[in-house]
Image 1 (cartoon, rainbow, N blue to C red):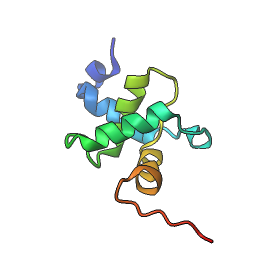
Image 2 (tube, rainbow, N blue to C red):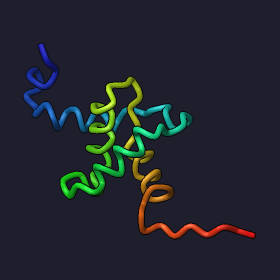
Image 3 (spheres, rainbow, N blue to C red):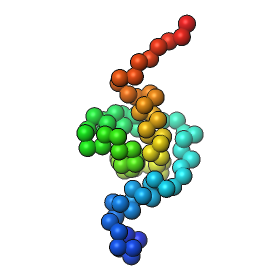
Image 4 (cartoon, rainbow, N blue to C red):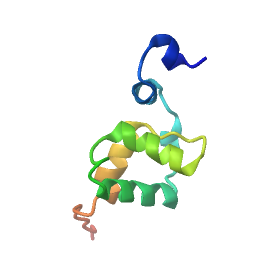
Length: 92
């Protein structure tokens, strides 16, 4: 029997809540190119824009790996590395 049915809670809501609550140790792992491409692709879609928990779940489901990035990891990767409006300067 599913937990969502027992608690009489929407399955999607329960999945998002669980992903937000679980502390992940994946911040120590490097981001793969597939993860970065998926994040850029989903950020271009207005449905997932700035919904970091949903993005982390969607990337996890798309790759089918055991790695589930936290919503903070996804947000930080976007703002600090992948954002196309980010201006990168080289220090000399």
